[in-house]
Image 1 (tube, rainbow, N blue to C red):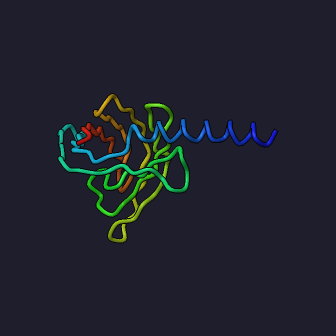
Image 2 (image 1 turned 180 degrees about the vertical axis):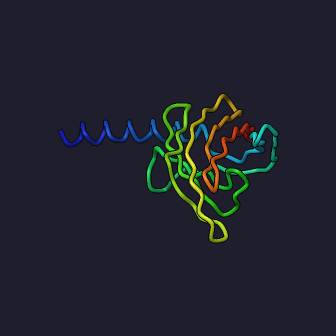
Image 3 (image 1 turned 45 degrees about the vertical axis):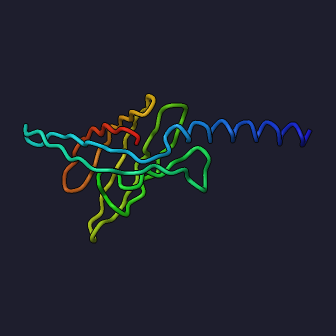
Length: 128
C-alpha cells in the first residue's frame, strides 16, 4: 500500500513540475495600462524560476520591472494565478494579484497593482 501511495505521489509531483517547466525562463515583456484615459507602456525583462518549496509554484522575478521582487504564482496546466500578496520597495508597500496563461513561448498576464490607487496592467511577454 505504501508503495502505491509513493508511486501516485511521484506521478503527481512530476506532472506539477512539467507544468512549471512550461513557464521557467527569461522573458522580454511589455506592460500596458491606462490611467485617466491615457495609455502607457513599459518594456523590460524578467525571469520565472521554479519554487524550491512547492512543485506547483513559480517565482516571477522582476515582474513589472520591480527588480529584487519575487512574486509567487501557482501553476495549473498552462495557466498561472498570482494570489493576492504584498511586497515592499523603498519603504512603500504594494499589493498584487492576477492571472495569466502561456502558449508556446508567449506569456500573457493580467495583474492588478495596488498602491495609492489600483492600476490594471496587461503584460505580454516572450520567452527568450
